Length: 198
Image (cartoon, rainbow, N blue to C red):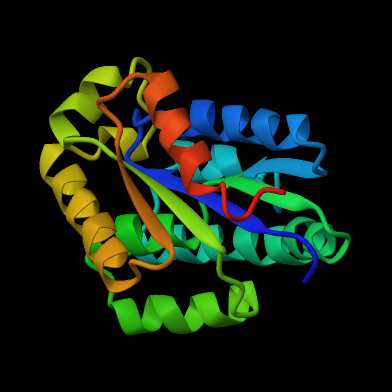
């Protein structure tokens, strides 16, 4: 495909949305066509409130994320990539593997099989993982949603999941210290993209 797919991952409060916006601005300033998107809600906008507000079983939670992701891939991400657009997504599949897999304890083989169908096997070219100690992440969240109220032990498991995912695919993940300032983190992201950005 002509476009490039980039994702930002990490715990709530790690600064993903800010870094995604800054990255999209940087790419646009380089003269590239860019589409900034997010999950949940990138494919089925109404699902975000349901996922973040309703009490759900872990299985229902994951399947709703997957339904949103299936539409996100088919309606937004793939068409943009086929047009040569750079897609920057604030969260993608790795969030579900970390949160519902490592955090909620759902079996990874099942998650991955559902994901394969939902995403058509689409993986990001690069994933920027903003790593933050869970204690700091929870301090940064001012108005927590349902997932953000899951507790410290949950977020410790999620962080461990992210680190394991990054360790398994070092060619795709760039691990970033989210305790650094916004500008310092963005500079690391831009430096890592030098080989890709014309």
